[in-house]
Length: 310
Image (cartoon, rainbow, N blue to C red):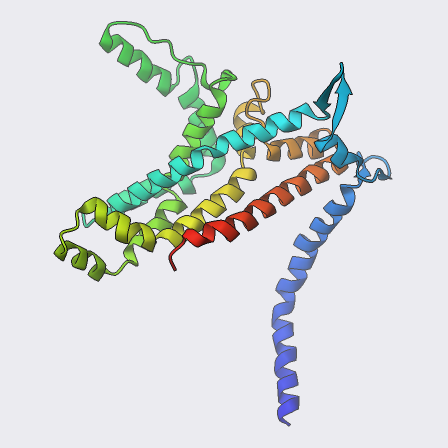
């Protein structure tokens, strides 16, 4: 009887799990598996897929001889990979700013809830609205940033020409990094740091104060080790998000320009898939990106985890 009852419980468990399992298989596992198959095909959607083996990966990562020297097969891909990595340079700055803001908001001040809400607002605003707002801010003719630069120059007694921001190949990526900084500083990272700070026992600080520790010593000996798991998690997720980012900005604000300066790997996949209908090549890029993220996460987990105090 006990064995029969256990069998019914197991069956009930599988029945409750089945909706999520079926949804995962149909909407996640199957598309991922199909994309892996398509990465070995040339397919423009209108005609039958043609098996090409590893040609898509050779085109993506290989070299060819040109004028007596080796040249990469797809120069755009490497340019867009560099764009993606360049935009990720802002991650440590965003993390430090989020931590500083969380420490400031962790203090008992009047209206702390209002400040926390105000700083969190940019991260819950619709992405399109944020993009349109920053299009106006970056406008070289009547945007807010160039107006501020103009008035500062006027105050100092000379004219300071404002940059072209998104219209300049040299300024386009720093402009997007500035926008990402504005979004990230008070977003989810700040909330996670705030939660981590509030989880540190107050006794630690009281003991340090009795020993005469100053503010920096308390931060370095208590706060930083205690929040290291949160820092590790935020860093890992930020890197993964960085490799997968840049689509919205490129699609809405710049179209990937000027001269491909703001095209990221994610936007390149989108263009190959939907604009140029190179389904197989887009799948190959997506799988290359997956392998890079997976390898980086493994290395980070293997070596970065040693710096975490649990």
